[in-house]
Image 1 (tube, rainbow, N blue to C red):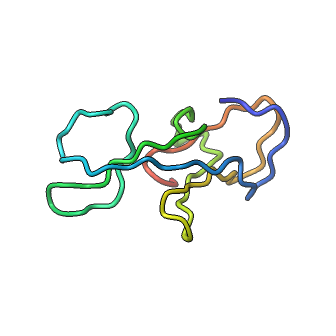
Image 2 (cartoon, rainbow, N blue to C red):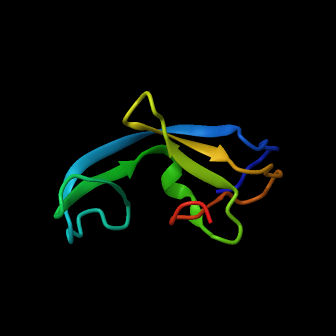
Length: 100
């Protein structure tokens, strides 16, 4: 995904809704689309499907320029936030493993 205008550090690019379900560990249901949520037990975790543009972000630890954070007030909302200024026509990258 690419930007068409300047995005300033700290700016929220989009808030996305989380669709979630309890998924057994090892399940291949929606493997290509789900994000691992919090652990419920030793054998289950919340599998989340994030709607909106979050699922379109590519991975890069080297070029990461956005992060995803869960909204503390609303359990099923996450925000895509710029962690540095992003220039027009620059691709948006998120490091899937956290923030390096």
